[in-house]
Length: 388
Image (cartoon, rainbow, N blue to C red; front, side, top):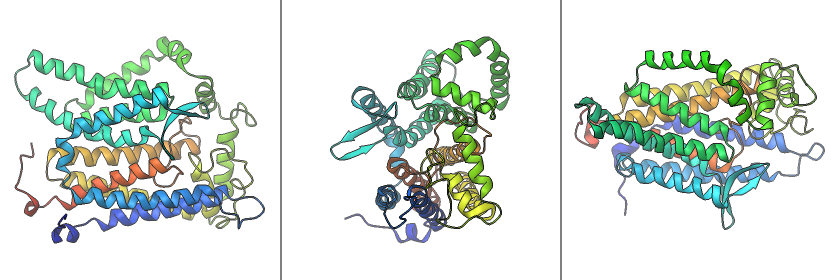
């Protein structure tokens, strides 16, 4: 029988747990409001009921993750990452296609998106890899170190990104590539100057490579870029989604219309109202005040995650905690940005709020890892380790 250390309970991060549960409950309420029938609001929607079930599963998964020392993740990091790749390949071979995308894998009655789980597996695998590679880079440059630095990134980044683009899931692909670069900078393997130089060269190259990149995009992806560059180009056509999103947010005013009083969701004006564009539904009902409270909850979650990374007991804990926090932050910024027209629409859900069982489960697993790292940051859990 697994013995639970009393000190683990004492140092449990109840604040992070409370925030993610509150956000999830707010999400369930908004999902219900967004998908309720326009006439009879007493008819229950299956979406919010499924989300309640996934919330219960997510909370159980979080506590299971907290019980085990997070350093076990480093020991089996490459195996965990390999499992994620196997799941992605399985989707390519035998995945279910929905709405023009092959992202779902069905095992009996259960259907899930491996790409959502891969986000956490990716952070674990890359964090372990960067720790190993930093040790080689401290030594004299050898053929072995060059091979490790040049070949393994292809496995960690190019392979999963290629599989995700094939689905297509451009949003998650961009997230993984961004996380890899962010962790490289955080670990100090690549300097900020090198990143700035690369970005400058990339922007300069856009006129020359733009045509090639444009031809590689699908029609709906091109339309999203067109709408982003010119929001007023076709408000009743390709610009409908973003236009209706802005209308919903603006109609909320200062204090909002009230719970179950919004119109964009139940009257079906806003596409993807319970998934990627759930924030406008929330903003319409709760207004500016409610939106500020919601954004403040996310801010506390981000700051708590950064504090956990700073106080982590070892390098692996710091990298994983920072990577998870960066993942939540990127998803948050991209989702809010695209709903208000500040970023292109790329199909990124709002963490803990948007509908999606696999996404909610993976977010709770990630939050469990954060809580695990924070609770085990003290010396009495294990001997001090090298922090360099």
